[in-house]
Length: 203
Image 1 (spheres, helix red, strand yellow):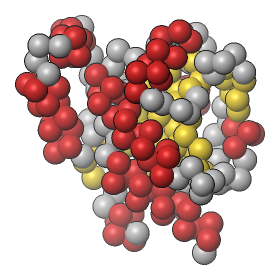
Image 2 (cartoon, rainbow, N blue to C red):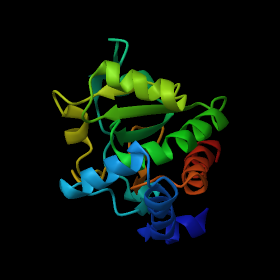
Image 3 (cartoon, rainbow, N blue to C red):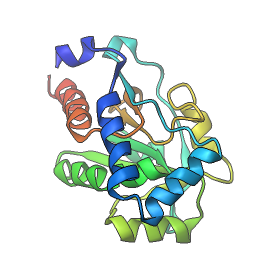
């Protein structure tokens, strides 16, 4: 785990390149590739694939947030006090978000019994679109619908710049950001990040 921390600000460029190549060649005739091309023409810029891990002494103050999820209920940082949260910033028409969705759900399932909570932050869509995405990709965790207020995005703006969608954060038991992936979340890297935070609690 120390090695992961030392590899501060290391990129996932290879993973991102492979995924992008698959989307543009292997699926060249479907609406997914067409959407990717359209987004690129409109100035769409995904996260650069870099990631950072912060040791406990490097972490900023806990971040407070609150928002309405697809069901209409409100969730907040207080609901997850003392637990690890994996927060993914996304929207339905974002091609990299579609690529990573099955992996995120698998990691969610892998940690379901270990006190790790997955929470999406949808930066663009309303509930029906988000729910359709969840059904298509089998997503079982909720997402805050942040399109109207952008309050959650603002709260985490130091870690998730506007162009870095998707981005995924690992938030420790104190509510501080312990790790960030800007771009497609590689499941093996995300898993190691989560395990690192869980081991801190056990130590």
